[in-house]
Image (cartoon, rainbow, N blue to C red; front, side, top):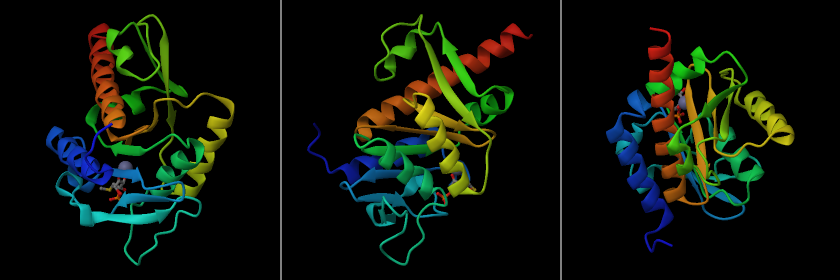
Length: 204
Ligand SMILES: CSC[C@@H](O)[C@@H](O)C(=O)COP(=O)(O)O
Ligand SMILES: [Zn+2]
């Protein structure tokens, strides 16, 4: 367990995500759980690759309301949903990568299926490239409460283990701590790149 404060770990993760180009033009949002009731969410509209500790806002997980007058992410409701669904979730990362944005539009089905990749084993609980990893894809919406409700309904019927894609928008993933969330993000992004290339080459 790291002796670096979780918020400082999250700030470092934001800089890493920014350096990767995975949160362009203020896209993306990140959070860390403070306790069972409160999470710390990135402030809306900021460049996520240059955030500091002061750019995170306390939000009530049960209500989605900020404890101060500042505006947390437009997608706060998706972060608080994850923290309510998964008490073990300690950090949530949302990114706007080209791979996630394009693949989620090319995939017309309800989930992006990943199969046959050794790097599936980077995902928590995955031990075999022969397994199929399903990443659900939801149509994008500006109505975050409605989108959160749709995702909650899905999670009541199907496993929601690694993250979900918003069509033409990006990826939201999570972990028990910042380190695991970073690994899930990096693993999924690698797999998305492989799958995008595979589909391009197979259709060439
Ligand atoms: C640059 S617009 C993108 C936003 O609408 C949203 O999708 C996003 O990821 C960032 O919103 P934010 O409110 O800054 O957390
Ligand atoms: Zn977004």
